[in-house]
Image (cartoon, rainbow, N blue to C red; front, top):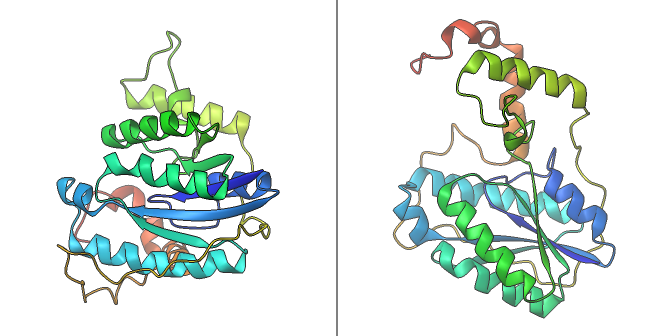
Length: 235
């Protein structure tokens, strides 16, 4: 089976169920793709700092994926409506059996994924979505009537109970993949309509930098005071 891992906002290799599944199932080859949608980003109010940070993170991700034997393809679709066409072309060209991605919950993102799934079905390929943004599947936390909770405390209790009953170790970085024979793309430094943001030094991009900041936070006094200070944006 040939698989494609479609990265969206989850630009990492560790604790990434969709990536892990794609590598495991990609016995005949795995490749990765990121599809930029700059016009949709503008519509959604995404600013220059985030775009610059995303592009820098993609360059770091590309290096991390290369160590796993996974080439990263960079495509630009302008808007979400053009994404199915790009994935169709990749599936046709490389005979992809499954496209794996992390589940996203936005209205436009859900509509995009439905359109992609429909397009891939016509090619006998499948879009496989995994939970990469949440510890537990969002739609599984329901009250006794099968509806979403409206009050936090009972939701928290139900969440904790399900977590303890289904607890498992995080998905570690996958083993090396069987590479799919595709050309790794160059990642641009900027997009038309977005100037390069030059104030990124305090926020180094990439998985390792993020893990380092997380570890620093956990080991600091800020973590001990998080319960009382979490609503203070000035801290």
